[in-house]
Length: 247
Image 1: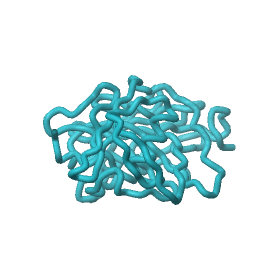
Image 2 (image 1 turned 120 degrees about the vertical axis):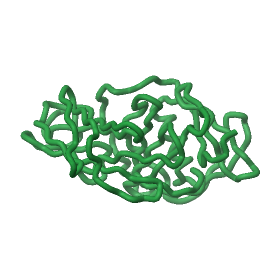
Image 3 (image 1 turned 90 degrees about the horizontal axis):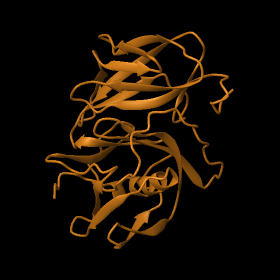
């Protein structure tokens, strides 16, 4: 077992999902905290950013893939992952390690640990060095699960954004994509030379980490990749398009 991996959830039975899908709606229940989950696999995005409403208070008992009962906080990263993958028809497999008091991912989508690489997560792009059951989420927090090294540098799509939505809404015309790199020490810098794909267009970020595109109709995938970095993906929709839950 690779004990440097600090989390644990599971095995998805869905392949890469890169086709635009509905954004989904946030919860209107004041007892819920609206959060976002996404999954970056070994070579492709496996789950586009989706809303997950987690209860703000309380605990619940869950079972790991071996049937062991575990009590977790409702708004923990682990609870969000269990809810989010279930809601999106993702099969999760995970094991609970009593000696560490923490979960461990055994596989997602058939992809399991390999050497020093396995499944890890960041919250709002930041490395927290805590297990998934020991990090609680607040309104708008974004969790990205990724296959790679625990201390990997991740890419972050800093613009375009709109509020705390899982995707971004843009007006027709030119717009700028801004990309940052965030290290495991939580140092954030512009990412130069990253490849940005938006719909059918492709560009490369400059020294300031930005690239400019012209709006394409409807809902499109924005994906950023760079060698040695964990990719980032989100959906971008032109304001007024029927696919977007915005006007």
